[in-house]
Amino acid sequence: MPPIISPVAASNVLTAGVRPEFISTYERKTQNVRARLDGAMDFAVPSDKAQEIYAYFESPPHARIWPRGQERSRGSFKDVQFTVVNRDWTVGVGYHENDSQDDQTKSLLKQARSAGEGAVLVDERVFYQVLTATADTELLPAIPNAPDGVALASATDGSGAARFGVSGGNIVTGTGVATAAAIRADFFNATELFLRFLDTEGQPLFDESIDDAGYVLFYNIQNRQIVLEAFVQERTLQIVQNAAGSENVGGAAVTNIVLASGLNVRLVGTPRITDNDMHVFARGAPYRPIFQQSRTGMREVIGDMTNSDRARDTKLITMDWDWRAGYGVGPAYGYVKINN
Amino acid sequence: MPRSSSSATAPEPSPASTAAVTVDVTAFEAPAPEPKRKYLIGTTRRSPFQNVTLGGVTFQRYVGNFEQRDGSVDPRVPMGAVVELDDSKVELIKTAVVKGVVRTRGSHHVKLDSSSKFFKAMAGDEPLARFVYMVPLEDDGRRPAGEPTPMTGEVPEVAAAAAA
Image (cartoon, rainbow over all chains, first blue to last red; front, side, top):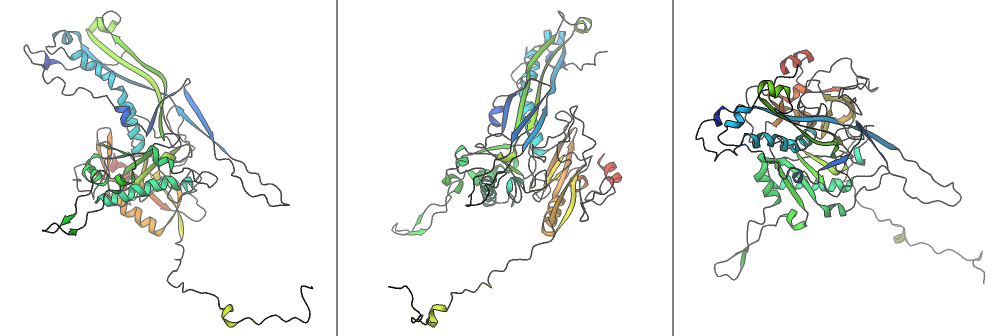
């Protein structure tokens, strides 16, 4: 027996003479979803199987001195494997054919179609699900660990050693969000942390060029004022002169170190983060910590009088979309969590 | 000309040349290392958050590759992670966890900070401490049997019922 469909409740738009000026009230905004996540998430990694197995090598040994008379030193390196399972995703709506015909705003169909357009929001929702490690029955059944066996943010790796060779791993213990100075200090600690990361042979993982590509910082939108003050506000005090205009009697305040340093920081405030933690992504890291792999593109299925027994029996029209995709956590060295 | 002669005598070093340069290092004293202890930490089965970071330490439900192809958890994977923490880190975690609040709206959960100026308690809010545990282990690292007691101190069944 097919599942019961709850059709669109359209009684309010059937009234004769109803005007459509506010019909876009909840029109879905899907533009720029992927642009918002640029630098933090990779999309459409190709997939042609039910699940994909990825692997990489850890660092090879670094060169070292070869003392005369001693045997040459040789090292080895390990490899790492991780799996990302593709899952089915869907969205669908149903509406009575009469409602579509009688809709005075002529927008029912458009609004129904926007459900399919909103599929791209799944990427964003999963991104934040992984970032905040939240259970959500509509999204991933479990948050994948990174290839080194631990969560996206962790002080240690799966073997209990300091992650990326740094005490504290890819977590900065923050100093809170009470002041712009505190936020800036934590952010600089995060950028310094990227440069302190070590490869698996104990040598620096990144160099200063990682700064050139810039950073993306995700934060709770409720902290917007203090975050903008930290990153965007310029000097607030100009040089003050005496009445005669002949002498400077007040010094200029220091300018904003983030701006002055030339660091490229893109700020993304979102209500999907609800605590005071902040999340910094280095755009210069070779891989994004979170990625989407695409098994199949989106398929649209419309069930109407021409092709659906249910529609013929009930006049209930259905519009369904589905696709297959997986979400994985890759090497987490492009991410630092500021834990407040 | 010979380089040395038995008749040659070495010059007497002057007293000044033997005086090594020294400094007073009492201003710097290396602190004694804080003893560390092993803890089993993690999030409970009913926690709406699989992982939670507190005081710079992530409480994970599972370590390693725990997910099976159908999305279920491999039953062989133990819960939580064994970490070594010193007392100051433990205090930092305790300070952080008491500020954490879990709010549930339908199937959606959010973690809030009760010390935030934006926070206002609402009916149904629960302490984050109800969903995380932190159990000191013996030196051999042996894990306790059963579900660990959450940081609220409630017995797991009570915490589970309260969270349900």
